[in-house]
Length: 618
Image 1: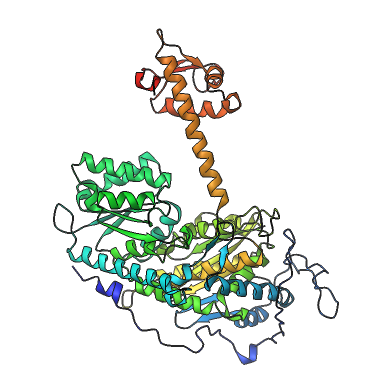
Image 2: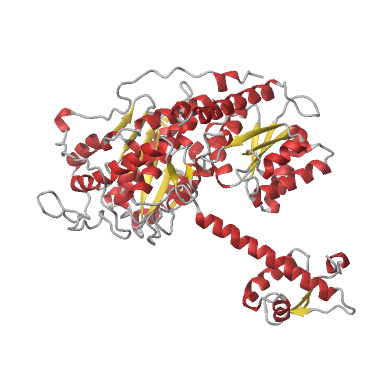
């Protein structure tokens, strides 16, 4: 077994680059640069106002003239398009990454008008990185950028936390892969079962799909839901390898219901197999959380921290993402290095040289600054299939907010969905090209088709990868010809460094865009509202079961109508939910329909089938 030390402890030194965010320019194609003033404050953004579609006279030039309205027609002259492409192309030479926003139709006037807002966003991001309270609703700092640049942490304690965690992840990984840490059955750990949901799963899943080698030291599976059949499937797939499976349980609060349920199901499987879970369990959670205390008391194999100042959707560069990646043989130091390089590029206040700002600018233009269009993410590489799912949470949970920072109801957001190229060619490109125009596209292009020396020609002069390239470029052209705007992100190849850079690019773009539209990108009140509502449903279910149990313990048994159940639960206003609860428990053989069917809610009668006497006196 190859040593894992190279994955965690060895990383090529980052050569200093005086201009790491060079963009391609050509003197004979250059367009005149506009002088952009930088005010100390940005004007307040009216929640429903869009400078993309119509720039109000309230935002006037210094000479008093109003900005023009948006020209809905896109530039189609090939020579002008080439000039625009060259002028706006961003290149990061060290990362081998390009960003092309030339097929988004923003104007120079629009860029000028957005300049003060972007400068205010840059200032906000700078304050965030220095430790300001960037999540005011929860009174928290936002520090995921420190994870790849610990020296930027606002104090030495946080810096040491980050560095110590990374060292612990690397040391544990080396010990597991080398066999120093082994399962109770002996030999080596062969599998990882990761139990977590949302940000505790989407990032690790994306990275595993993108970067795991064909034969990793440990293969990974995920339990990322509370679906019993899905959990059973993952455990069944492990078979006898359950005895050599490292179970990583990830929950920041330690009380996420779906993760708790997955843990309990896995522990049951261990008991039934005669295995001791604690000797194969690893917890990633906040210090002193319920999960952390449980793991400590039960003597789990290892515990790693999550930090209050790192949100789930931005936790890929923490132990949440780094530990599973390292155990699969992925070079996590390179992931961190790529993210750090991208962060450096995104700190410039020159908009054209800041790729995250270019994305935010393009998003604002394309969706009117109010989410009027969806973002379709199309990576033309199978290994990046899950990038769109990862971005769904990162973008939508961050930007989908009811209120802005001033308390105004704005109902902001940016919908994200995607597939992969060229599968999309046989799925929904037909609608994108000819149907309702409610989207813009983000293409993710990977230049390297196969490792060097492995390519071959299907026909003279054409490889399999050439077809994929042709599909991407053809789709981009066909969409633009019908006034469908697009962004293209290009990387040389899919490596830990470029994946780290992509994560960092979109994290920063989300932060900048949120600042421009004046919302808090770092809380999720809607998610909490959903959790609260789910808890209320489960509480109602317990009352329903108690009522049915009491009726089932009578002699003779008393089948109840839906109205009777609702009345005895003192919840007639919840009769629809009570019906759904009964239908669900009946479908799972936990209740019996005495008369009628669930298809006729007003006509059926229900009872439990057996009396639980203990419940009567609980």
